[in-house]
Length: 315
Ligand code: UDP
Ligand code: MG
Image 1: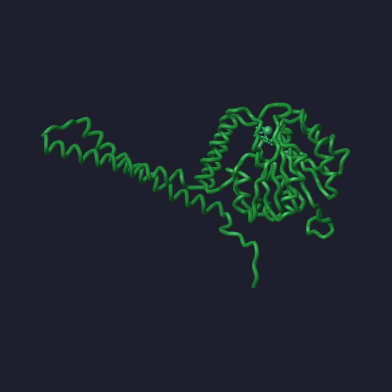
Image 2: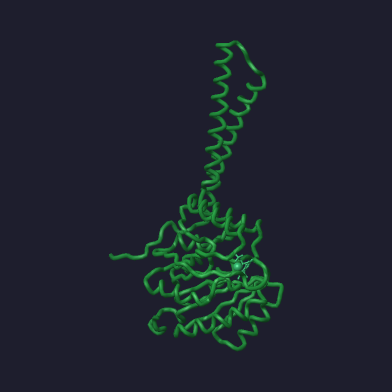
């Protein structure tokens, strides 16, 4: 591990923990995290971000902080979501390496040294991969489907999007903090975008220690939809394509009806109507998609994400 004095940053490691109603887990988490960090023989801080908890989480954090200077606690006025909490932790952190971990002990804190080893090996983002994930079947199923669809559409090829046991080098975190977007914040995908040398390693995964998952089906769907729309314009492009297909179908159908009329002298009013209707619906859908494409481009413009990142240069 690098000694602290050589580094630009005051600390080697910041551990960022988003907390939303985790009163039953915090003490156990701290009691396992603390010795793990002590064993690293390096400087560190533990940052708890209370994401608007309604239970005793904040009081417990304060209690922990009273006896430990390396603990920092921040409280949101309301619930903003896990990724916003982590972003706040990033902005408040002082470490050269930043590790994120869930508060519910699904990610064992004992795995942190494994992540740090990969950082020392030169990777700038180390993602945890829950190969043996201990979540309910339906949850794993949705994630697996989501992972595949998202990898295909967004081009972000991660084995595990959702695992939040991750380590980042400072420069990647700073790039993520520069992204000034209010909606659709998804940190692993942004980290993928701004990383230079990412690796995913298998980490242990356990069942949630206490309490319930903070994600229901609706929240999960929203999260996946957010990633989809904030990292690609493909949904709207599919609509444009759909318009073309509907119009083509209508046109072809109409052509067949005309041929039938010419050769067999029969016609059917309803079928003709369907054909005309399809052509117009197709054209309208196509135009909607086209307008959507322009709106999508405005969306890309206003986000002002950096177009590229230069990691090395020699002049
Ligand atoms: N969390 C948060 N804000 C939220 C939802 C979750 O800070 O709105 C925290 C939560 O306390 C936990 C972590 O994010 O530390 C992961 O949440 P959870 O375990 O509910 O997610 P799951 O493991 O089911 O994906
Ligand atoms: Mg969990």
